[in-house]
Length: 123
Image (cartoon, rainbow, N blue to C red; front, side):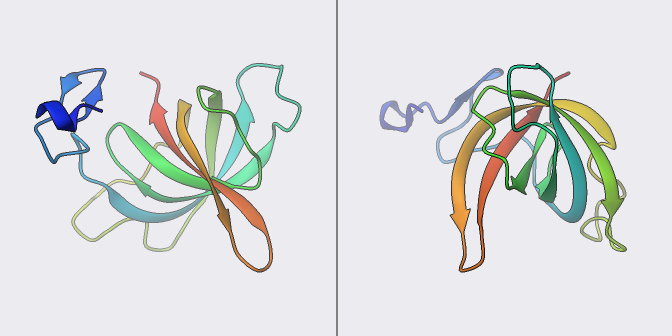
């Protein structure tokens, strides 16, 4: 990130304008997905996750598995909610894809610890 230099956030397409974090808008959803590491060296692989928003280039997911940043996951939709997305968006998240974990944070409540993560589709 280079906001101090007035360049905005950096991603693979270059720098975004100052104050802007994303190229594409996020859309709300309630989607349950199956997650499996695309490489065999992650012992915890094979779990379900909850996708709560998505965009043209990625999505946010919570799961009980602590996937490391830069892990490539095979994601497959198990169940879309009755109302797939916000009213203005005619599509939902991709039904099957490869995506890379870009960042991860711990999300805890009184019952369990989960991990929230931002994933970018691999095109």
